[in-house]
Amino acid sequence: MKKGTVERASGIPAGDACPPPPAFRSHLLPRTRDGWVALLLFLGLLALAEPPAVYAFANRVEPWVGGMPFLYAYLLAVYLALIAVLVWALGRKL
Image (cartoon, rainbow, N blue to C red; front, side):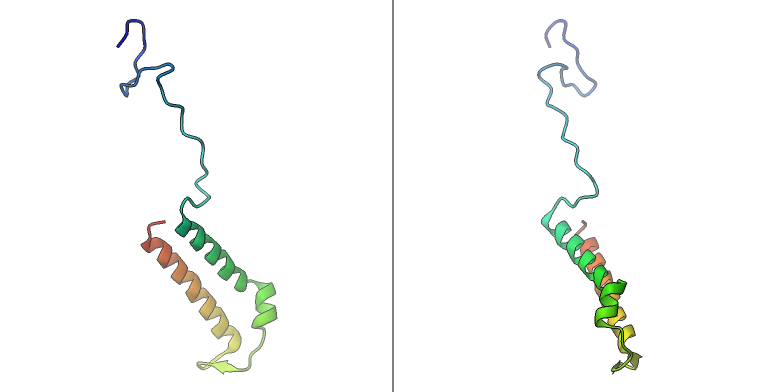
C-alpha cells in the first residue's frame, strides 16, 4: 500500500480504486423470470377471485359441482390454484 493512502476494514484501499456501490434495486420487484411468472400468475388468479370477475363468471348457484353450488366450486378451484402458485414459488426458492 502506498504511503498516505487509507485502507478500509475490508482491505480495499479507499479512493479511485474502489468499485462504485451497487445500484439500488427494490426488493418488491422480482429479479428472475420465474419470479415474474409467479407474480403475474398470482395476480391474474387473484383477479379471478375478486367481485367483478366473480359476478361476471360465477354468480350462480346452478349447476351443482361435486355437491357444491357452482360459485363455491369456482372459488375453491381459484383458491387452490393460488396456493399451487405459492407452493411452486416456494419450491423454486423465489
